[in-house]
Amino acid sequence: MKPKRILVAVNGSKADAGVVELACDLSKRSKADIYAVYVVEVKRSLPLDAVIDSEMKKAEDVLTQAEEVAGERGCELEADIIQARDVGPAIVEEAVEREADLIIIGLTQKRRFGTFSLGNVILHVLKEAPCRVLLSRESLLVEVITA
Amino acid sequence: MNVLVMGCGRMGAQLASLLDAEGHKVTVLDIDAHGFRRLPPGFGGIALVGDGTSEDALKKAGIEEADAFVAVTQGDNRNIMAAQIAKHIFNVSRVLCRIYDPLRRDIYEALGLEAISPTTVFAQIFKDKLLSM
Amino acid sequence: MYIIIVGGGTVGYYLCEALLNEGHEVLVLDKDAAKCERFGDDMGSVCMRGDGCEAATLAQAGAARADVLIATTDEDEDNLVACQVAKYEFGVARTLARVNNPKNEMIFKKLGVDRTINVTNLILDHIEGDLPTHPMVHLLTMMEDGTEIVEVRVREKSTAVGKAVKDLSLPPDAVLVLLIRNGYKPQTVIGDTVLEVNDRIIALTPTAAEDVLRKELTGLD
Image (tube, rainbow over all chains, first blue to last red; front, top):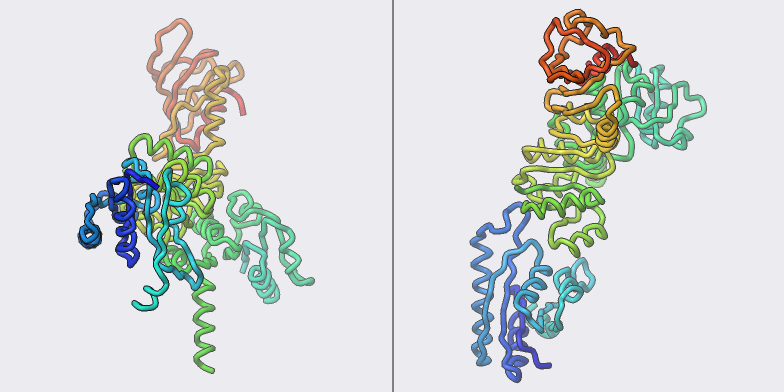
């Protein structure tokens, strides 16, 4: 795999660090650019361009964290915040716009209503992304230790 | 009292037969004649096939002479629409309707429609029963 | 403008597409997951799954900041309730409802829906417009107060032929405005205007008095 432009989707979950590390490792050989995006999901009760301070703060923190993780691995990334109604389509659109050839997305073990679930975001990206998609699932051990 | 009941489900049929037994003049309206099987054999009222959200069908069912109108079909919106037609178009003096969705019931109560939500009523009854055991 | 469309059927679909092209913010509400998915595939995040008659769904849809709500389902009662909840619970300024039974148009207006669209009547209007020999043609309906502008052709059978306008028994609120007669310039109608066969009259009439006016001028029931 020799990606040239990697899009990393971060969302503030425990999976973020692992996803950024993976992107850094994969970028080295092909000197790929890395874009880290955080999607702020804007409720319909607000206009799409509404400035939500709490969400902005969270987005900035998450992206700063991602930059730090990348820095520790000796690589750089370009960070971006997007506002959208739905996260999945926003990630796909961003990948198209940036002409990414690889999307890396993380999954923390999800047990919604007691059953395993991928969630709408990942399903949408897997279904609609024009490029290759890597899904990184967190080790169960991490869950156990932190829980 | 002259009562027009819209919807001949379990609730509508039961209500119609109670009123009939007490000597009231009852007309039951349903879009499907199949519902009328629920009326008791000795039912003395009138059963009519027709759409209660249609002005014409309501006229045929004698809404202009009715003292009361009750909307108890399975559809909240059908009941709401028919009840409003009865109240605002035909000026029936007593109009009552069933709205399962509690939120929707509150909205239409605020708009002046007399409505009962079985959801709220039964949840309350069950809770009281449970806690009194 | 922010426009909410209730119902993602054919009408809702093409309406959404057209309104998006005009640059509006649009959200479609539909109970059916498959229909919503179709919107997502074709137009992006413009459809939310949910019952547009439910206050909870409308709150989530941001109805409180919507400028217009259009109810397009094929059930009249659902369209009525969606419009009423939007208007009375969320203060949406303009509500429009598709009406399937033409008789419901007046009822909906009486119950607070700002505007109704009835396909049957629309088609009828076009048929009338396409037939120049039709004795009465609807030119314009001013929905707000139930007044219509119509064109009526005076026919042989009419008792109005040869009579002055002031002697006709017209409905009290109907006004004959303009007379168009072959070979003459259009002229304003006055009390002394005497009607002839094939005169075309542009008149203003309350919808309710339309039939009386037609009968008087055309002799047709």
